[in-house]
Length: 232
Image 1 (cartoon, rainbow, N blue to C red):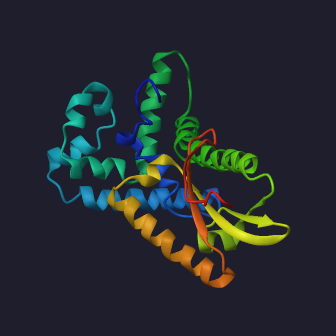
Image 2: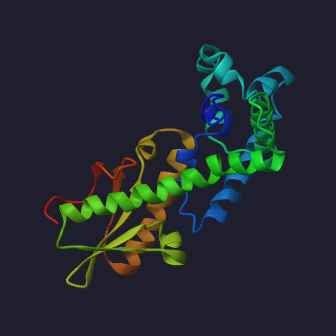
Image 3: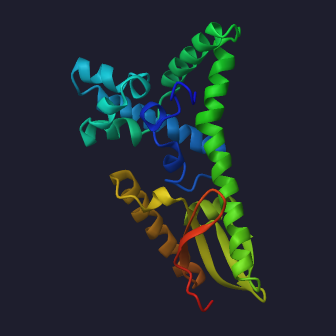
């Protein structure tokens, strides 16, 4: 997929950002969201003329003519980068992978190729997101050794868009929302996510009486931006 650029945002959407848009409770919920987003994309693309539709559905275009893709109208590119894909579109990518495997003398079934594509597009970004958050908390623990960071999982974390709670001497001090660098973007879908998360963070504060701080970090857990006050 790397060689063919089939995992580029042009082909499958900006998956690293999409997986962070909502506080999904588990992988299955994230996968269902990704497919629904793909269905929404199909509807939007269907409103364009046939040549434009063909261009947007051409997953080989990013490898064969990157300058053309980068020169496209911003709104058009958004239809590919800001949305997921349907299962049917992932099967089409799997077919491309299968044909490539055949050329390399590897006899793989379509289902095998689909599961490979599904792992790369759905599960790997999910695993990377989980690992990044764990690494971030390890970093924070080094900065605030006196604090205890507890993962807020399940329904509570989902409902309030909170990843971790910080305790000092057993008393809740604040909560954390950990996001990647892409969360600072100004794309419409990111802005909507920011607004939605802020609203439900406020519900958490109203219920528990402590603030929710945003932390931006990279895949290694390095803190790139933090709202946590320095005197905590």
